[in-house]
Image (tube, rainbow, N blue to C red; front, side, top):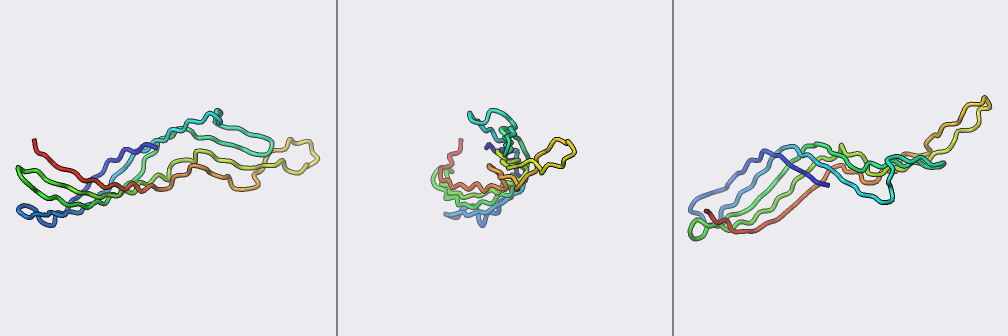
Length: 149
């Protein structure tokens, strides 16, 4: 799965300037474009119907969804306008528009009606969906040094 986020964030800095440690927090809202690519040597067909079960395979799909991000960190300035930074962030992605990668259901022919109609299949159970995405949380932590050019 690949996710491309586009968000509008706001940052609140508790104090900035001559202080030794400058903490900040922030968050934002936006949208994401997510795409999924599934490679399977076993499932070459998009749809297969057997005598007892049905199998549906969705290999590639692109969807859009909302996102919410939260982050916090600190900056510590030191010589020549350089800064040490430490940051943690988490982002919630809504991926509920994805269809399942694989859906399996069982079926059986209906009882004979005696009027010569060809039987159709009826599902015994709700399909078993594999590879369902509802939402995804992505979190990260980073540390580094900011060097102005």
